[in-house]
Image (cartoon, rainbow, N blue to C red):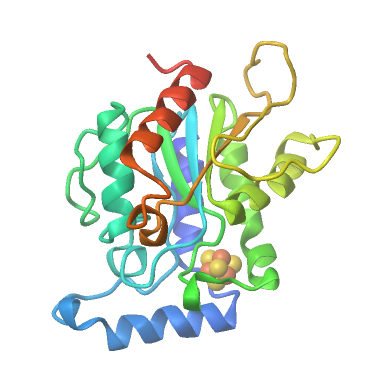
Length: 237
Ligand code: SF4
């Protein structure tokens, strides 16, 4: 499985299937933000990061133009990641509270993080076609971590919506009716205890964007509650 995940990561990093996103990620990497003008931007798709035997997955929207698209690691080098990894560290899921570069020593416990769309989109808004073009990478990654995966936290409504096609593609499961996104919303396949390789539960969480964290819509305490609940569902001690 480790080799397969590494191969998938490498394949993702070379992808150029979405012309608009390829042009945008490379333009951002060339023009840069003034604060990072001396850095070499990644400027490529950003693969998943974390444990290969993850029981818990965190699904985001897409890399940030000057975060993941700069550093090459998801939620790394921006304020969203600062909030997310601080919470993961408090929850015992990350060995350090910060994520600043690919070689900063960060490791995750029983957790993998990835995005529904692997390239930074303009205005953080992928088109439906770009979302669907990138979806097979998410499906393949879920299939590879399926043996241990018990819970997925969807950060925001876009990730929540991206989960259902993945559930159908990987597990052959679909909910009987539409399940609306909400902070703290929970879906699972049934009342029976989780079986190895069975469909993971889905837990909704407001996105860790500055728009939410600066306004207090999402507080550190709310994130702590989400991780406490996710760990219990995933059987992470
Ligand atoms: S968004 Fe996904 S499918 Fe599109 S170019 Fe990036 S990695 Fe490839």
